Length: 553
Image (tube, rainbow, N blue to C red):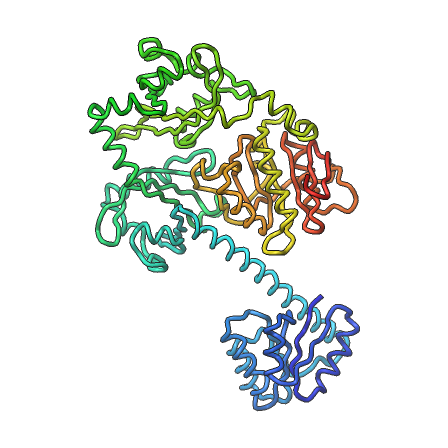
């Protein structure tokens, strides 16, 4: 339905148009006798399109048109001339009219075409308004993010968030239109950066390099930069650049290196486990606290593989820790914060939260891994305790998948909050797809710029309380959240590109539910869908609804 605000100070046009519109059935008309009346109606949000008559002098509807466009509103405005001359018609176009007619339609066919045009103009405006609002939400999220993000196209910065400007010492907007080469320390470094960012990419399309860039005051800033195409299929769309200030990190790293001997006693007596591992996972150093904690002497563990000593081959929850070690050494930046099960010399299993830092030489080759661990066993539930406390239906849903129980619980809790609260008092519908991440990503694509790309792994953990509000804010956007079985949020605003014809969806459920049924049928994933109407939560597995919750349990 398209509501039309009709400005006509003589009412004759209104009567004619209302008669025609009533036949269409979906074109309600709101009359306005003066420009002031029209402004009041627009302020109340009562219209999807403005239809205005203007006379020979062109002043009646033209004045309202000028006010609408000067306010920044993009609502469609259609002008109908009433004896106006050619100059008046041109004047209406110059002031931003979407369509100008030299008189009323003179046949039923012409009226049908005219009303169809009105519907098309209003529909386009609605879509543009929705897109503008979604982009506004996304831009607010990116500006609130601690990561510096920009978009570069044809050697020019075309967009940059607030942290990006701050990192380089500029005010918002001052970087737009600048060539990124201005911020590089020389031609040689320019070539090295290009090779790092565009010469080699990881499996998700990101190139990365650590370098120094010039700030506004001329000082050099150490930073880690990542880059990937906005659209891999269309290079002309430019590249997303994500930067992270490494100054403080390097300062601390250099202090540690220079002061290693001086602070050896401090390290030995620290109440944290401190390990140094070579790239093959062999222990090079363990502090005294670590020796005491694990029950090994330095001679017993230094020179031995971490796997089989303080790390079992497989955790009690089934996680392949041998594979994890290989992945850590291949892509250490993905495991800067990692929680896993460990093992004492006595065989006792413990949970350790590790903070890892890759130490590289001047060529970028990994030479050592520095790991600092803290015992969180008392904050982790025992496997037996989990099996007792978790509801039987939850355990049945995640059985046979790679989804960890705390991850499922965290996503379900967020879905339940969205179901109960909506967002800012309005109902919200959204979708989560958990587990089998690579296959899910291969069968979906981005509707919008992925708000989670480029962020550190620890900042994307669904179990983090700090991420909860961000997820609830982004739930207002179209598309699904993709969450790995170990809790990493890989994407938001994801469109599932899959044939849903074979999916078993109960009558009354829409395309959102059908697409989730389809993706869970073709992958070992689990889907959680919150309906916008009624807040019902539907859980999908193996292509079908396995549970429907009308009130969040």
